[in-house]
Amino acid sequence: MNAAIELPPRVRLVEVGPRDGLQNEKAMVPTDVKVALIDLLADAGFAAIEATSFVSPKWVPQMGDASEVMAQIRRKSGVRYPVLTPNMKGFDAALAAKADEVAVFAAASETFSQKNTHCSIAESLERARPIFAAAKANGVRVRGYISCALGCPYEGEVAPAKVAEIAAALHAFGSYEVSLGDTIGVGTAGKTQALFAVVAARVPVRLLAGHFHDTYGQALVNLYAAMELGVATFDCSVGGLGGCPYAKGATGNVASEDVVYLLNGVGIETGVDLTKLRIAGQFISDFLGRPPVSRVARALAVKEPLPVRA
Ligand code: HMG
Ligand code: MG
Image (cartoon, rainbow, N blue to C red):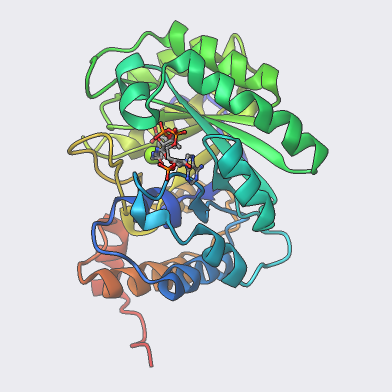
């Protein structure tokens, strides 16, 4: 490691498993299972848990119980429960469900934008724009996401300058943070650093987050590479759950257990307890009937088995 590079002393983790993870599950996950997972993740120490999304249930049926999920979670003091809202219809429903934070999303590729939201990039930003005013009036924070920041399943290479342009727009609208999504996990460490360097010239690096899917096994190293540039917020998914319904073959986000193990190892604080996180991971894996994708969860399951749940 280059001794001259200073890593952030503390990293903020946004647990996105209940949304980004579960949205990709074909079989319906009952509301009470989603709620129990979110509550276990709060117990594990995450200060931000993306709970669900207020999108069209016709397109993403798994998120059709968004209002029920928000009504049933045990809201823990100091924990935020952001939800995805693509338009005012979603925002109004999120507000009615007492969401304290929403996330809007745009893509850096026109084809992905059409597949994911049936509109152009410019139109998706126009749909998002009124959310910012309504959110401000209601004391709700807005986070911005950019998909395909390191590559598109339909168009291939994506120019960092395009990502920077959209990040600047979301920042100007009032996003408190912009998360750059490697939706299909094609990024490498070098590309990640090049991307964050270009975007940071338009939006301060402390307002940027990394959202790495692990399709090519690069997510953890990309996260580290982003940290080397001063990025201190990352999205992760318990057990490595997930993918994107609009990106064929894309796998889940970087596994939360792997991220916490990495950050513990280099002395970076996250506030997350790895054992309690493993309990949350075990709970959802047991329900889904498959082991967690997380390498750390698998290794520790052998070395330090969790007590069997009653
Ligand atoms: P649309 O189909 O283009 O058009 O929706 P519409 O606005 O005319 O609406 C069509 C129907 O959907 C209407 O119902 C609306 O009422 C309804 P109908 O009259 O046919 O019965 N509708 C809604 N219902 C509930 N909540 C809403 C809502 N809006 C409209 N908010 C829309 C456009 C974007 C809503 C739709 O295409 C959609 O929901 N797409 C799903 C997008 C999605 O959830 N993608 C996955 C999340 S993004 C992601 O995973 C990437 C990320 O993780 C970062 C990364 O990895 O890169 C964030
Ligand atoms: Mg994602």
